[in-house]
Image (tube, rainbow, N blue to C red; front, side, top):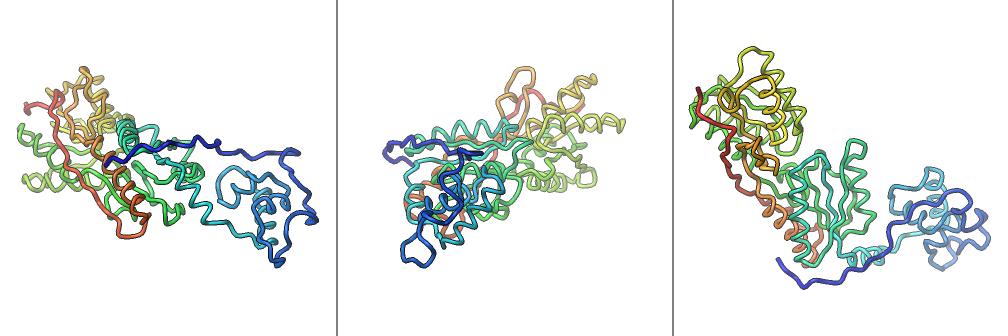
Length: 370
């Protein structure tokens, strides 16, 4: 969906809390620190900052419950706000947010497929006249912290990629939120995802068509889409009369989990003839570990991944996989948010779901059973 490209105000970067003597902009004494409660004059944020003895920027962070200020500063600001009966100007906050022309995107720095999505989100937001602010989830920085960072950046809309837990952040009623990778029954927001059950089914169908009947699934644990892919695998095995041979090996969406799953299968003594992995990273770890152990892939074991990340297409990997359409997923997510912004509905109204069809991409990691 295209709209004329708007100019983007640069705006100052988010302030950091000042420490020590530099933080103080006034005495903690109430004299001259703004109107007293009940005086008739509405107190301002600067009044609160002066009474608390902190900078205006620090007071703003505390009022918005944003990260940065120390516990002591937070206590002083909250006490000052209560004494002055300060109430934030919601209209001014909304105006500033509406003028930002920014989309906030939370993603995992350890997920290659998220990089593919981000590339396409940039293209879609650019076309709609918006820019992007990224906030990464890493082992030392969880989803809550990543989302809080986007909130402080005054983003007009949020796109959450592959969230592992229900988001409880207060975005406000005017900020559209779209989740990529989770189905409608897993989120209260608009949802864009691939039909993951169907994706796992077509992976099993492909292997059965090659004569395989001993097919194992290395799942994605509690990661987004994992339950659906696991259900699709089990359903397809039952549909082919192989329900009694179905086996799920615990895993997640990392190469390490694929390597560990391979070692588990090798230790069992009898390898399956085929494996459906939770995603491409898991499949690549599995493939490398099996080949390191001298197992021929696909001669002895066929492997199917999920996502179609770029490394799956490398000649030495050549991974058969179930493709998710990153371009269309990004386009739909941006479009859903822009439609809510243009209509002024924010997060009011029923949440919507956009489910995309998966596509099997056959490469060199699968072959006929021997």
